Amino acid sequence: MTETAETPIAMHEPSLYETTRRADYLDTLADIDDRQIARFHEQGYLAIQRAFTPQQIESAGQAMWDLIDCKSQDFKGIMAEAAKRGHFSKLTGKARRDSVRKIWKFVDHDTRLNDLAHDPNILSVLSRMMDDTPVLFQDMGLIKPPHIGREKPWHQDCAYFNYPVGTTVVGVWIAIDAATEENGCLHIIPGSHREGPIPHFRRRDWQICDTDVAVPRNVTVPLDPGGCLFWHGMTHHGSPTNRSAHRRRALQYHYRPESTIEMTAKERLAIYGGDELGVTC
Image (tube, rainbow, N blue to C red; front, side, top):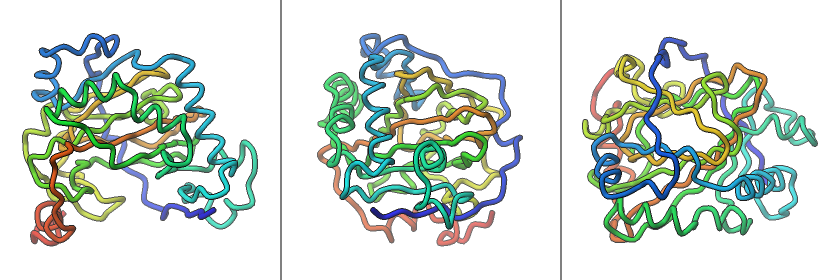
């Protein structure tokens, strides 16, 4: 078991996530017709209130705990919150579960999470969004423990991936616990994917400069367990610190079109790297 801890970071300005606006929602995956696919390409997201059954979510949540509880001997992808650095490996039970920030590369270790990633209804939506066969290339479990769950600053996912500009990368974010405005639900900026690549900088993370965030345009995406969000890899999004007493767990899968040809990390940084572009933040 490999266990790592996040690097401590400065607290974000609360004003970076100020808004009174919420995302628009569809009820179920069955509501995604051609008009909604066009809306995804216009707005850069689709939020679904009831995408998965309670049984699927309960099973997925238990799978996350099983991995964190070391029930898979060869699973290595656990990252603890920075606040738990130095003693995470000694923690057990609830104390251990409430110290984890992230798990990743788990689909080959747990059939429950693999099945969710390859849910036929999800893949059908993705194939229509991409007009191609979707290929899973990243799997993560994102956790904001009570009181200490850190911010994920505003960013574009494509700034992390070695795929050419114009590739329809799609993220699928599935709420395992209720994601609320108090415990760090996602915030997105509708339509921002059409603005092209934005320089990213290593500040609190690999992120868009705080002064470049169009805060007045942002909307929150609260979700009940079983709700999900599809978003374009160029859509600006982030999530604030969890200051509540309630944990926030989610699964996040990223997909690319099967026909995609990768570029190099150097080529990606020449597009998104603020320092490489000589841009200041």
